Image (cartoon, helix red, strand yellow):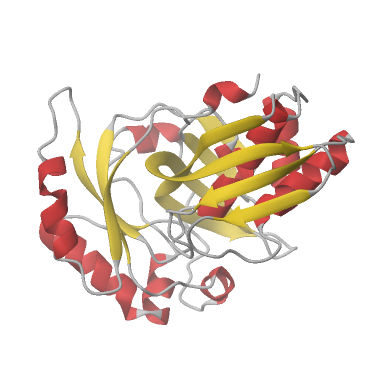
Length: 291
């Protein structure tokens, strides 16, 4: 195999995000449900015979040594592979949004190179490597929606009812470190169980980072109010500035929302981006690694 083209890297939403405490090493203990969505980056891979690792930015420029190159380097070193790769990235998921775009790109690199280089590593081995790159990377190596605990490393598959979400990313991007250090961050939410969430996934819980995020930027609050005025609900995802609303829980009937997307996008303030997204029941690369 010489190349893999049009390989997806989906973003994710945190349907809720609770902070239960903080470990002695400073890492926060979390509970969340992650769901992949159909807002995606697209990556292309061409094998190199000289062992070099090169990245080519097709849209926005990324940092010189980004998570994709670090993922490729980590897999190359851990496997002893002699091949290299050219990675081209069509970046569509906004950065600094809390949607896991960089982590998803890194996971797609691991899955694609595992196939392109003929390594045949199982999913668990890739996830162990991915955890060294970032807390969200193992999720994007998994099969689909997950109940997340610990510092993000404990994943349990969870079946979710299909739903549509309208996701808005204000112009501002928020630094994760400042949010987790903010005095408004609550760190004492009581632990929940999966059954609590499944009783009503659309309304369960909250994002414990949202108060700190609003204090750092009023745009997060503005985005929430914009969504609530149109859909009656809103919630920040992750530790970035993106906010989403549940548009409809689908029960077999076609949602009316897609026909209204263009109108909603025209109503966004200047500098904001948004998209009507569908929650994915499986990661699009779920079959690319064996369990």
